[in-house]
Amino acid sequence: MAANVQGGGLALAMRYEPPIDRTGMDSSKWEKYAGRDILPFWVADMDLPTAPFVLDAIQERLTHQILGYAVPPDAAGGAFVDWLQRRYRWRVSEEWLVWLPGVVPGFNVAAQAAAGHPERTELLIPIPAYPPFLKVPETVGLRGVLAPLVRGERWEMDFDELRSAVSRRTAAFMLCNPQNPTGRVYEAAELASLAELILASDTVLVSDEIHCPIILAPASRHVPIASLDEALAQRSISLFASTKGYNYPGLGVAVAVIPNAALRERFEAFAKSGLVSGMSPLAYAAATAAFADTSDWLDERNAFLAENAAVLQRAVCGIDGIRTTAVEGTCLTWLDVSALGLADPAAHFEAAGLGLSDGADFAAPGFLRFNFGCPRSLLVRGIERLRQGACEPPAH
Image (cartoon, rainbow, N blue to C red; front, side, top):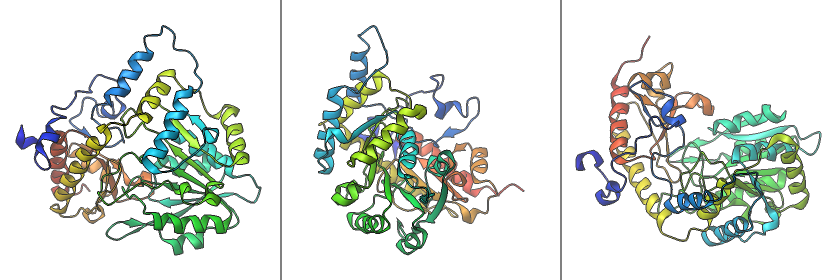
């Protein structure tokens, strides 16, 4: 078994061995390739156990014989407020919170709430971007303006590009931090520069911070951008969830932090207009348990994910035709395979038995996203197929 979990701390890696069999369990991640010899590393759903205290909270709620419509329990708001203060030094009021069935409906509602003036017809979106970000403009009837990130040793915002892209027509700036798919964790100085731009343009900031529990680089620290400046907070909608970090993504629950009362009122009005569904009492139970966590469970999980990220990055450095940058947060590696000259990179690697997210869906053809949130032995198998796929000539 040791050979199957090569690289990183063996004891930590062995904690997640052998891999949990998810076939036949209605997993969208695994059912996508059911009946085919393709290992799935595509969607941001980790093949690692859900936090045990989250499962315990769900089990406890199941002792009641009715699962009806639910309202946010008092304990959920208090746990979340304490979590923000404890982990990110941001003190917010429970009055600022709006609970949602996920961040995706959250940033669609946020975009509508931001477009409060007839001249505000555009959304500014840095790319590559999480695919649902790119669908927001069409969903809410606005125009998407795409601003490419710049890749050096890491991916960074191009502030010259952003300044030229923002205008009096910009309703909202759509931020993702930690950034999906590149794995960047933006530094406070970068976020402060973005805050200046947001305030100068009198636009609204919509910040997707769902991956903030998953910080891997020792030098990185997640900073909720709205915590930097009170004036910016008044123009912000920040979206959080514990579903990624504690690994229960199928049980949708998220929370929006909206300090400005008028903006929050518009947000709630759109949310209650039929665009957003209610949430399961099991989702509230899971979120409350995750936000109340003060154990070392998350730190240990992140240490394992950091080792996986390092194993994958070292492997990619030895594969001709594939480039990547170091992952600072998330469980996702962004692979540049453009040098391989593939007409359809995702299909090419599927033929090699590896299911990855297609960069074209992120407005970045020639890239692939690899989710390394899995047991080490499964990751090693995926790396071998990545290497095999890179060595195979493209189909014509």
